Amino acid sequence: PAVLSCMILFCSCGVTTDEVTAIPTMPVPTSAASAAEPSETTVTSASETAASSEETTLTAASETSAHELHTAPDAEMIKISEPSCRAAAMYCPADDTLLYADNIHVRTAPASLTKLLTASVALKYLSPDTVCTVGTEQSMIGEGSSICYVRPGQELLLSDLITGMLMASGNDAAYAVAVNTARALDDPNMSDEDAVSFFCGLMNDFASEIGMTESHFTTPDGWDSEDQYTTAADLIILAGYAMTVPEISSITNVYEKDVVYYSGESNTWHNSNKLLDPDGVYYRPDVTGLKTGTTENAGSCLIASFEQDGRTYITVVVGCSSDDDRYVLTLKLADMIPE
Image 1 (cartoon, rainbow, N blue to C red):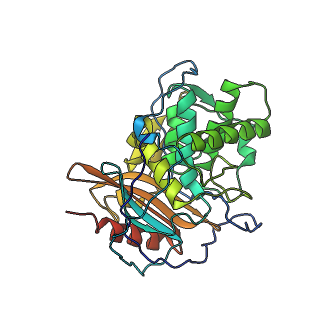
Image 2 (cartoon, helix red, strand yellow; image 1 turned 60 degrees about the horizontal axis):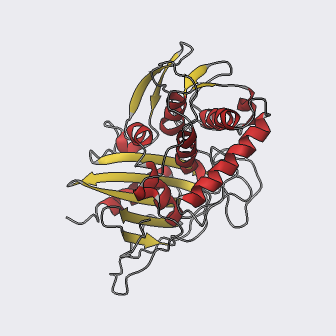
C-alpha cells in the first residue's frame, strides 16, 4: 500500500457557520453528514445486462491503508486567509505529496461528497450494466433534497443511476443505488430500511479498507445525520480512489449528458460542479472533476481535480460559507500548483 509521505504547506482557514439548505434539525456535536445541493437532471444510455456480483480489486493507488499524513519539518508556511473554510487541502498523487493543508483532521459533515463512496461501493460489487429498479426507497430521501428526477417503477442501468447521483447530485438516485446493491448481495426481499442499513455497513467497511480511518457514514446520500462525519484527510483518500474507477472518472468530468433509461424514459443532467461549466464564471479547462456538496452541517464543499502537464492534483475544501467561496478558494489552491 502506498503511504502518503507529505510535504504540507499550511493555510489558515477560519471556521465558518454552516450554510443552511433545507435540512432537518438535530445539530451534530462533533460533525454530521450532508446532502448535496440541488441540481438539474440527466441519465445514461441503456444496454440490457443481468445483475452481476463480481467484485473488483482495489487498485494500488487506493490501497492507502491506515496511514498518517506527515508534515515535512521544513515545509513552507503559506496562508490563504480568504475565503474562510473549515478545512482545505491539495494533494498530488504522482508525488504522493500533500502540497497544502489546513485542519485536515478536523471532523466535518461529508455532504454529497459521500456519493463518491456510494458509487465506489456499488461498483465494487455490481456490474455497471446491472439493471436497477427505482422503488419505495424514494420515500426515505430528505425534504428539500437535490434530486435527478428518477421515479418509482423506472428501470436504469447502475451506471445511469450513478451518473444522476454524481452529476446532478441526486439523493433519489443514491437511495436507489443503495437499495438495489444491498438486495442483490443479500436478500431481495429485505425492507428499504434494512437495505439502506446493510449498504451503509458496506460503505463503512469499504472506507476502512481504503484507509479512511477518520470517517463514519450512516446515509448513502450524505444527508446530515447523527454520527456521520469525515475529514479532509479522508476525503483526499476517497477522491484518490474514485479517480481510479473509470465509471466514476468518466462521469465526474462531464458537464452535460443525455441519457436513455433502460425502461425507455430519457433525461438530461447537468453537473453541479461549476468549474466544468464552459459558460460559467468559474470554468477551468484543466478541471477533470469531481464532486460538490452542501448541507447545513457541512457548509459548501468541493472536491476538485486538475490536470496540468500530465499530472493530477486533487483539492478539498469543506465548510465554506457559500458556493461562491468554495470555488474561489479552490481556484486559489489551483493557482498554487507548481509550474
